[in-house]
Image 1 (cartoon, one colour):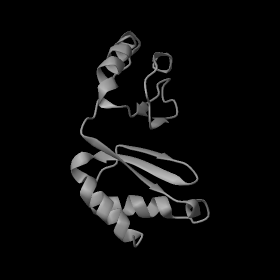
Image 2 (cartoon, helix red, strand yellow):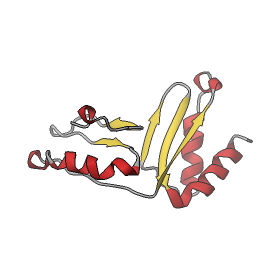
Image 3 (cartoon, one colour):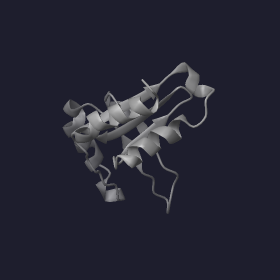
Image 4 (tube, one colour):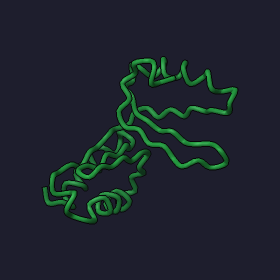
Length: 119
């Protein structure tokens, strides 16, 4: 349903099925939230549930050398864990790692990630 509605979906992640259910997480602009919630209500009879997190920030660690250097994601996760910053969503590719965190942790997360990579 969301794919047919011309919504700007950014990050998206799907879990493997457990008991014939999946968890689908995605980010979208705040101005599309109410419309996306209306669409999701059509699936409530099938057991669907929507959890909404507002005041979030998406951070991306990106670079051409990432595909040849192992341990980048681990370093990002370790530094955030050390700062007790929970990650709400993660997506990765060969050249980037994107995470969603609470907006209140943005400054600490950026500074910590930059420090761990000497930027």
